[in-house]
Image (cartoon, rainbow, N blue to C red; front, side, top):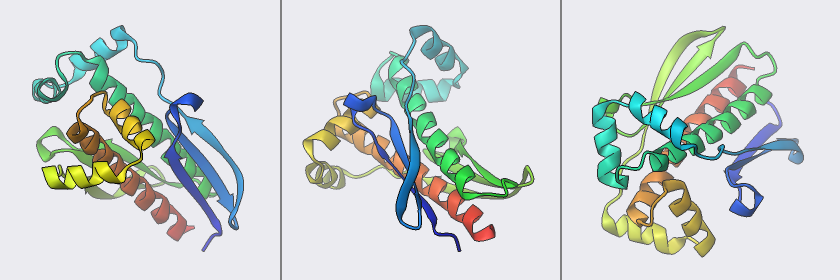
Length: 191
């Protein structure tokens, strides 16, 4: 078993937002990188929006309104997080013949992620990481446990002022993080 590890955490907006990857070797920090989402362009958001299925667009409209920039910003934040997780996985896998990919669950399966475990480019397993919506008391407990900065962070990522939306984004991000950690652990177990 390797003494290599990593941590990915939210990066403050004053530092560009996004995610910070820190790499560790035998417990000592040896490097890292920042993974930020690019600014949201109206044209790119519109093109992305048009590529969604009607059901996905209606779900976003019911939650965030008709402006495609808000869900597109969430999409970019998640992609930045994915880039950090994948970078960590590549770093942990010195042979680089084992990898993984994280994809959104098909629309019919709800919110969450598919973790594809790959060996020499071929899929050898697929795991699901679902994001479950919270009930109002769970959301309130989560919200009051956050610092003011954490509250602002999750509201900004969700692109809304609604704590239920912020909670949903947090749960989706945690499901993504769990998928990434499972992928990285799978690679580490096989090296």
